[in-house]
Length: 294
Image (cartoon, rainbow, N blue to C red; front, side):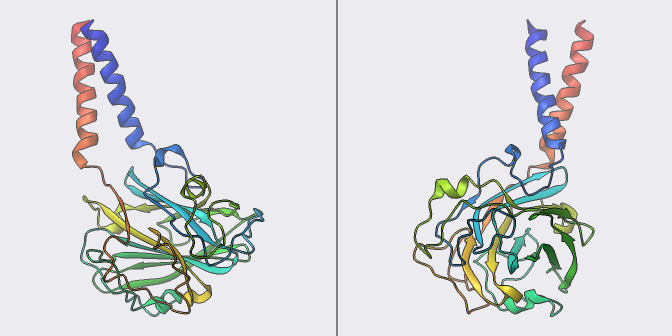
């Protein structure tokens, strides 16, 4: 009986090890490995509600829910929603625990510079930033390191077919975009969003970011995302975490100020390095015990 119990335990630990090692498929579609959303949209979009579902998102852009996990040496982020292919931008800011920026100051090398002067929530030190826009079926990407002397800018593009595509234009971060969503929040600007409808969206923007780009963090990773207009020149009301009910678009402003808004970010947990090691060493010990017991 002891051997049977140990066998069950070893199988469970082996499954944990496999789960920890399994690579995510980055394609812009949500899978079960992400678990529950880390942030859900609170308000309906001021950038219009797309109902076409043909990959163009004609008529609207929205952020419905955010997901994130750390697995296999990468941070995986999934932003459920859709982005009109008129050049509307998605901005993602990451705080990985290193000294960074409390007020955004990216190099003046590409469009994200329009947001310089944006103020993050207390405790959020931006260390990395990503800017992506879909214009006429091509996804254009900017990437920035914000520690020490800030660097970065436009890194390249990848093509979309029917609103779906993948690529790694900068060579390190891998992106997947599925722009077919026509559900989720609606276009009644600033009114309370239907949380269940937002959480039901399973397509959007996904990315795999090597932890080495983020200083190999051992503590929680904080993330803020928003939708901006063409040239990052007109902020929407679509942020994750969501803004208070009644909030309209922040544009024509190109900057936000969360200096008096605690917690305007969602948190991705980083497993302790010992967790996988303990699981694997436990598995090895149990298998050795079984061999001796036979």
